[in-house]
Image (cartoon, rainbow, N blue to C red):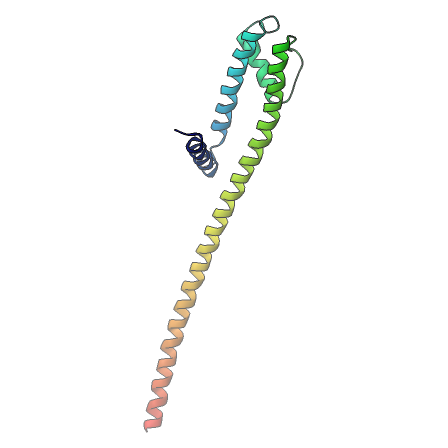
Length: 152
């Protein structure tokens, strides 16, 4: 499967999750997978500063969330390179995520509002049709009375 197809498929899944108001599991899943992956990576490349994978995951979560408590920090060059990438990715990911989810919520709300407006317009159109039919019936009755009077 090529990148474009994967991106399109992912976009459809995210749009469906937003439309059904179930986006949280997707966000939590993506963040968890990313934090675990980065936590394992940082433990492998910087075991001096990260005593366990759990500590690496903790650091990844805190860094991805842009909190940065500072209780655990990488001190090796590779650890700092990974840390820098995680910081940049975390800020970019959060900004992109916020923009995407907001955009999808707005689009969903817009579609729902358009559907409501169309339903209202349809009801109004039906009311107008019924009114026109009644008017046509009354006009026909009046024409008939007029014709009878003229015939007398």
